[in-house]
Length: 171
Image 1 (cartoon, helix red, strand yellow):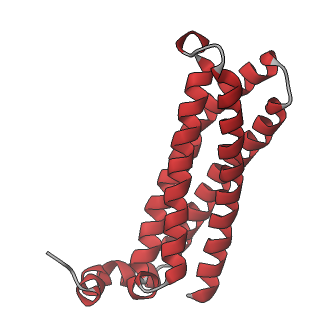
Image 2 (cartoon, one colour; image 1 turned 120 degrees about the vertical axis):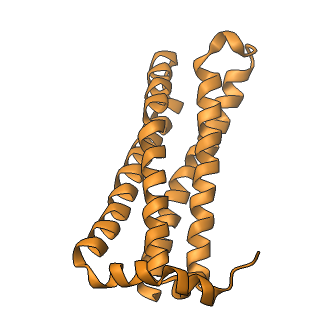
């Protein structure tokens, strides 16, 4: 069953009214969205920075960085989940504007790419942390791939932030 934009607007009218008529509610949702992006992106970009440093370091520093990457995945994923939930609430407050905005769909696509990139980073980090489970020649290739996906992480967090600012100014 396909729902039209008009039907969706009608179904979300109570939420739109509550959101529009409550400063506390709108501020809480917007604040939650921004805080999730601040902490998720902050943790991720900080971890990315240390990964770049570890790429030029020895085995001990690399092992420490892999442990740190492992520890940072949970808070970053939690923040991404919160930003996604609050993003849905923000979009539902003005569904017609957001559903028809190309910038909104670009931002949503960037968030999807962030999740995929994070999954790849996690997979690489997991294999690198378990030396017994990988062939001897594999680490240099995996560190090279980790570098590429770390660059993607920084670029995607930056692009997502810019898309959010453009979206806010366009709506």
